[in-house]
Image (cartoon, rainbow, N blue to C red):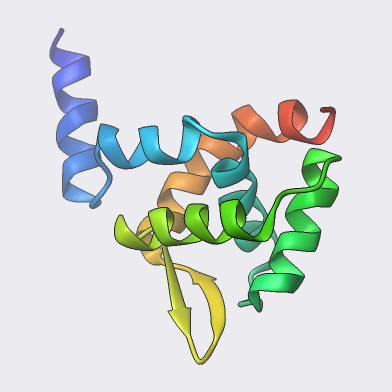
Length: 110
């Protein structure tokens, strides 16, 4: 029990909470967006990011749905939009460090 409390405290101090983790892990498109931005270490335009995410998921995503997921991640400060390009935030980077190792094989083999 003490270890769980310490882990929650550490997550809270880093800006991560279970809700933000849930936003990323509850949908494969959002998880793939975070994974791609974290892995490439670069900001990308929406279309370029969408094509990379479709490659990871091995399926097409409608433009409207993709943009909705981008905005959902932005609303949680997981990604940011700078000069028309999407970038991962420091909080998003921390979340990716937690979820990417667990999700990488799962997403790339779909």
